[in-house]
Amino acid sequence: MVYGIIVVAIIVLLITYVILQETRAQMHWRGLVAEGNVEAIRQLLEGEIASWHTERVPKNVPALLWHGIQTVELIDVTPDAARVNCSAEGEYSLVEGRRVETSSALEEGKKITMKLADMVLYEVPNVKLDGVQIDVYTSFRDEGGRSEPRCILSTRVERREVEDFDWENTAAPEFIELTKGRYAISSNGAIHAVKPLAWDNGAARNADQPEPGPTQGLSET
Image (cartoon, rainbow, N blue to C red; front, side, top):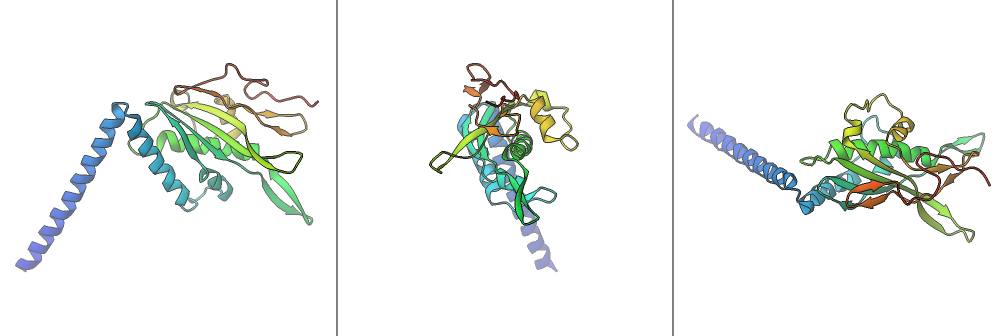
C-alpha cells in the first residue's frame, strides 16, 4: 500500500514537472513574440506549417483544399505580419467519358486563401499576427509546352477586417471580395497571371501594379 502511494506520488510529481516545463516554454515564446522577435515568430510559423505538411486531411475539409494547404511556404516575416505562398490546381470529374473541369484553379485558390488566412491568423500557437499576405500560384504552359508556376491570386488579410467575419457561413468568393484579393479573369473564364501585391516591410500595397486592379476582370483581346 505504501509503495503504491509512493509510486503514485512520483508519477504526479513527474506530470507536474512536465506541465511546469511546458508552461515555461510557452511563456518564453510568448514573451519573444510580444517583443517583436522576428526569428522567434519565424520559427513558430515554420513549425506549424511543417505540421500541416504531414497532417492527415481534417474532418469536413475537402482533400483538394487540404492539398493546397500542404503546399504552403513561408516567404517573409515581420513582427506583425507574414507572407506565404501556395499552389492551387483545378478539380476535374469524369462526365460521359470526358474529363471536365468542375472547379478552376482560381476558384480553388480562393478557397485555399480563405482557409489559410484563418489558420495563420488564429491557429498558430503563441503567435497573433495583424495580417497575412497569401499569394496563390498555378502552372501555366508556354508555347513550347514547358510548365511554369505563376501567381493567379494575391490577397492581404488584415485581422481587424475579419474580426467579426463569419468563417463558417461565408463563401470563398465573398471573402476574396471583402479582402480585395487581386486576380484577373477574362469574360470567357480564362485565368490570367497577376503580379503579387507589393510587400513593403510587412505592408501589402496595390500601388505600382499593372492592370487590372484588384478583383477586376480582363477583357478578351
